[in-house]
Image (cartoon, rainbow, N blue to C red; front, side, top):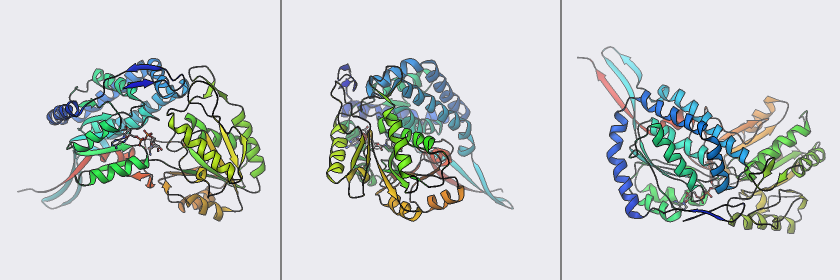
Length: 455
Ligand code: NAD
């Protein structure tokens, strides 16, 4: 398999893909080794993952360079991602024992009732490329801490990062037969779906997630899917600083070139402040440096996947045909690499794909609304349900709006953020199950009820 740098279109490495034989052999090794790993006391497993985090810190420059070379995100954003992963590992390692230890639930005379949290066994993690450290850590860190063995399939667009993760986990003390990497794309994923894993944890698109969920269902094992989004933001008329809200939401829409599952994908603005907001938003977008992602100060690099250029191109074209106005950007950049101009569209409506389908690229539609009711109706008018955000001076107003929106996360005066302390979960086509928080630690376990009567 060829690893291509999306900024230059050059092949940076060739790697050997796994086959059905090698993946079956890896699965057998994991199956054999898992009970021994689970018999290691929990505090020791936690220590190993803390060491992994320290190694990420030690190697951050080299790891960030590799990540930028294969996915094209600006170097500083690669560093941010690795640091973000370390923050998540810190929370997970500090809180895992709290949620994995045996719990006494009731006691009545000589009878006591307990729950113990047993690992699922050998779990399969099929992952995405847009934040390989973050979405990987969400799964393999709590899975390993809980006593599981893990087969991690990085996206074919983040293979070198997947191999780096494997090396560092080994160095940290995870036995090689407890964590294995499966290299390849769709075909490798298909083989994994055919093996008897005890749980599947998928991060990626709705289309693939639905397919995997259906295929795995016959196995009667847990299958969690963290999928795409069409995340809305509503800017109410009572915000105090339009300029900073415009800059913050523009960052939420365009960070990592819009290739975040929780990127701002639709913006609704109260009519009283619409003109001023749009003006500030466009100014902010025009101020960014676009270019080679390893160059200082670059905020917009290339898209990771060449085929996504056609998706954003089509969405912009359809919007313009339907009457949208391009305030800035609007087309591919004529240079080597998969570059698209950061694009702001106004006069958009919900008949346009840019307001309905996940764009996963540097384009955004901004729409004027009359009041909170109209904003709520439009925000809910989607097949996705990952995050939603409201900017307002009033917490009460924001919470009232958010409580009426069917998404797994609600933000007040912020957007495009994830915290390890609370669940990360999508509703509707954005997925099923949760990672992070207590829910995302226990997701890798099966509870056993003990009814214990003293003689
Ligand atoms: P994708 O669905 O194309 O691929 C995801 C993974 O599935 C890859 O590892 C791929 O090789 C594998 N795969 C593809 N076909 C398969 C098959 N038939 N059987 C088994 N495995 C298969 O998604 P992507 O392009 O890697 O990621 C982008 C998508 O992921 C976006 O929709 C984004 O919103 C979503 N995402 C969601 C979250 C979240 O937390 N909700 C986080 C990151 C990305």
